[in-house]
Length: 172
Image (cartoon, rainbow, N blue to C red; front, side, top):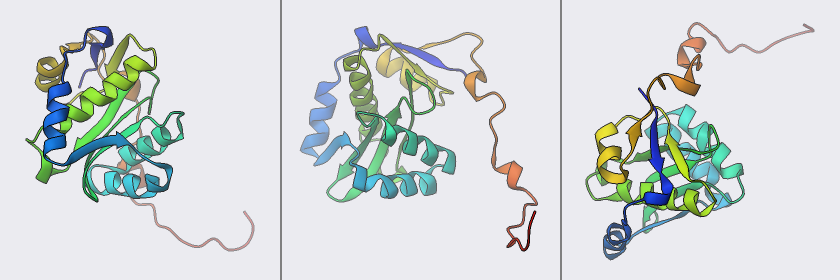
């Protein structure tokens, strides 16, 4: 998968989409520190442990660079920036049951707006999956030669194959 580039100084106005979510009682906000373990665990279970690690990193930033979408006390989705690299948007994900309601679009827009307000002129969407969505929604363009980009050599769960957790005894 390739990386995408978004011009933050030329974002389409998606404020109306965020307003539609408010009418559906869906809110988008930054994660609060006491929620970190809940959001990280949710992301790890719904998506991947690696993404959970990126949420942890985004939570360490000042200001926190992880947003969530909620309906009441229900977590619907999340989006981060400055997690793996500065200037990068992602990871992001929406619970399957909440897809198709504009939650992902609103999370994308709010997060990219926060990046623009932080002084970024461009955002990189790393290892983008739904390229057509990002093209249509924020006029993203593919960065030629960007696959696998910064994720080259990324460790995966395969490194754990055959590893058995045993208590250690004595000195090493």
